[in-house]
Length: 120
Image (cartoon, rainbow, N blue to C red):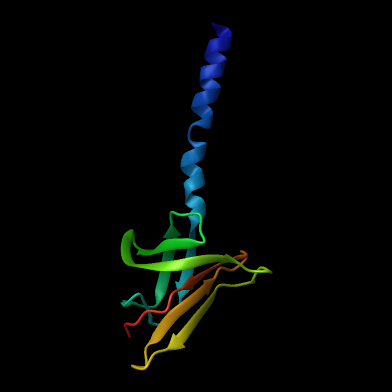
């Protein structure tokens, strides 16, 4: 009985570990200027960027204040070296809007590449 209780207690203590592990597919990022991603405009601010898949193709949600602001397909890639700070890569559209092309996460080797959209 003593061993059964110990085993049961061990299992219960380890149960929350998978729940904690699913947060590994999210990062925080500060977007300093207005950008367009998948036809949605993101205002400057702090966002939680999250995805469920392991990659390389992922669906990314931009969450602010607990609300999903935009969702976009992306490719998860690994950089050769860690960048020291977040790097937001944009490209100017024909309508003079900044289109989000890439997010390199500071102190991580991960980056998200966003597919070119036909919307401006």
